[in-house]
Amino acid sequence: MARILVAVMALGVMVTLGVVSAQDDGASGDETAMPPYTRTGADTCLKCHDETSEFPVLSIFRTPHATVGDEKTPFAGLQCEACHGPGGEHGKRVRFGQERPPIPAFGDNSIWSTDRENEICLDCHRGSERMHWEASTHRRYDLGCADCHEVHDTHDPVTVTAEQTQVCLDCHVEQRSAVNQASSHPIRAGKMDCSACHQPHGALTEAMLSKPTVNETCFGCHAEKRGPVLWEHAPVTEDCTLCHRPHGSNHPALLTKRPPLLCQECHSRAGHPSIGRTGADLPSGRASGFLLTGSCTNCHSQVHGSNHPSGSNLSR
Ligand code: HEC
Ligand code: HEC
Ligand code: HEC
Ligand code: HEC
Ligand code: HEC
Ligand code: HEC
Ligand code: HEC
Ligand code: HEC
Ligand code: HEC
Ligand code: HEC
Image 1: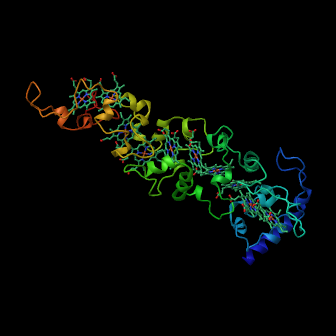
Image 2: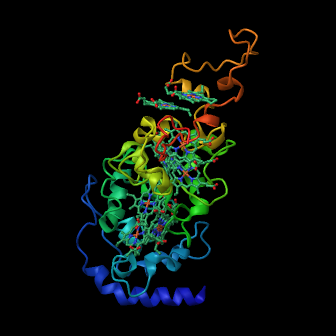
Image 3: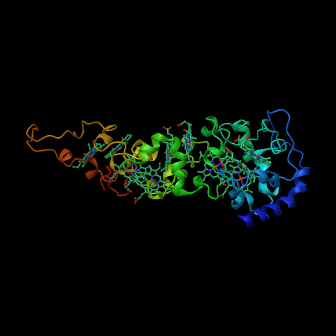
């Protein structure tokens, strides 16, 4: 810890000049008068926020935000105040019984609006990845960057595949139960995360999918389903979710229903009846092969389309 503190101090001294000369108010604000910045940046903050703090303040020096020599990081500029805003007033000594002027904490009690806090992060992180943040569902529901990201932590769980899912599922209870169903993508096992299909920062697509359509999203990993095939099955070309639930299902292969019910959502029962019959009630007296096989896919095995010259009925 001592070593880190020394590094911090050195850094503080290095950039003190920059801190003092920075006169811009950080963000366009709805708040009125801006308090001043501290004169010595992090050095001031660390006088009170040290290793005895309950909140892990210091671990931020082991994150990419404190990479020494990267002039784009907060610590090359206003340091703590690059995110928390001017702390000149907050960092002063206060008399006994007097209240310490607040400083934005990115939490429920923060003195800034969520949008304003997000703007601080976006000033450095707009990029292509967060181009659609303003229009995103998460932004519309007032999520902040800090609802998912833990910037003070040496590792930010939401950026780690095996841990991201927990962050998302804390809020998304419907998907939590889905991924625990019998058939699901290997999400539970920690081998796949939500951002394999979604762009949590927003996208101009249905359900913030990371590719333009549902099918393009699926083809990213199931390329063999893209075709082209000689004999297409119309719903497959249209939308995989006509038959599959992406998050999980109690039917095999993530299906919305089991065949024959699945197939009969669209195909008339008239052609091949699928109610189990003994045969006695059939004119021929023989049980129907269409029924006793139990599933349409026993014969129509190529539900995703066929490349066989005579595969028009998707059976080979
Ligand atoms: C003189 C001591 C002192 C200094 C210097 C100081 N703080 Fe604080 N800070 C506190 C105390 C005490 C609290 C606990 C909350 C309170 O009493 O308002 C606090 C709370 C905070 C909080 C949480 C606010 C909340 O609403 O939960 C943040 C964030 C914070 N400080 C950041 C900073 C930053 C950034 C700096 C440097 C610019 C800084 N502090 C400098 C004493 C200090
Ligand atoms: C990259 C932006 C950023 C920088 C730089 C930064 N913080 Fe923070 N800080 C946050 C965010 C975001 C939170 C909210 C908690 C979280 O999600 O990690 C926070 C939380 C805190 C809290 C706890 C607030 C609470 O809810 O109790 C304190 C105290 C604090 N920061 C102090 C500091 C100090 C001191 C520094 C400089 C050494 C610093 N921060 C640098 C973004 C930053
Ligand atoms: C002064 C500019 C600046 C500010 C303000 C800032 N960042 Fe960063 N951030 C950086 C730089 C530079 C990096 C390291 C290089 C990179 O990955 O782009 C970084 C890295 C990150 C990373 C990737 C970390 C990793 O493990 O790879 C995340 C996530 C992040 N920032 C989130 C945030 C959030 C959330 C906020 C607001 C609370 C914020 N940043 C505020 C400049 C900034
Ligand atoms: C709903 C959760 C969520 C919210 C809210 C969120 N992020 Fe992220 N962020 C993620 C996830 C998940 C990743 C990892 C992405 C991946 O694996 O492709 C990530 C990655 C990042 C990264 C590092 C990788 C990159 O894209 O360069 C940065 C920087 C970042 N987010 C910044 C932000 C900022 C700024 C905000 C607020 C405007 C924000 N995030 C809000 C979930 C979120
Ligand atoms: C703090 C709570 C919270 C967290 C954490 C969170 N979300 Fe959300 N998310 C919401 C809310 C609220 C909505 C809007 C209501 C809804 O659709 O449930 C939403 C909506 C969505 C939508 C639907 C978007 C649309 O346009 O229909 C997707 C997809 C999504 N979130 C993915 C994620 C992913 C992926 C993560 C993790 C990286 C995540 N969320 C983390 C709260 C959260
Ligand atoms: C295999 C790709 C894939 C993965 C992985 C995935 N999703 Fe989705 N998600 C989709 C598709 C496709 C849709 C839109 C169509 C649908 O729901 O049928 C969707 C829709 C959503 C919606 C909007 C639901 C609604 O009813 O509008 C939310 C919220 C969501 N996903 C959250 C998550 C979360 C949280 C995770 C991680 C546990 C996750 N997704 C993982 C593909 C995926
Ligand atoms: C990031 C890669 C990825 C994406 C994107 C993806 N999948 Fe998967 N999918 C997998 C993996 C990995 C498996 C598991 C394969 C295994 O267990 O052998 C799988 C398995 C499946 C299965 C078979 C499940 C079973 O129990 O047999 C179906 C059906 C499926 N995916 C449909 C979809 C659909 C529909 C989409 C688009 C919404 C999609 N996948 C997007 C990687 C992906
Ligand atoms: C008409 C319904 C239907 C549609 C639409 C559909 N599937 Fe399937 N899919 C099935 C059925 C039924 C099974 C189970 C196959 C079996 O029992 O042999 C299956 C199985 C799968 C499997 C696991 C077995 C395998 O063949 O690899 C994957 C992966 C899969 N589908 C991906 C997709 C993708 C990607 C799309 C969209 C391009 C899609 N499916 C569209 C009905 C459909
Ligand atoms: C979402 C609706 C939908 C579902 C579900 C569906 N289909 Fe289809 N299917 C179609 C459409 C539309 C066509 C094209 C009909 C046409 O061209 O006349 C088609 C064509 C077919 C054909 C070729 C018909 C021909 O004229 O040669 C077969 C065989 C078939 N489906 C079997 C199945 C089976 C087996 C399932 C269940 C695994 C299934 N379908 C599920 C909509 C669906
Ligand atoms: C025992 C094998 C078998 C089973 C089981 C079976 N089919 Fe067929 N199906 C066929 C054959 C063979 C044809 C081609 C008939 C023809 O060309 O006259 C066909 C044709 C079709 C067609 C094309 C339109 C038509 O009527 O000619 C559709 C749609 C179809 N089947 C759907 C289904 C559905 C839905 C199920 C499950 C309820 C199912 N099939 C079960 C063998 C089967």
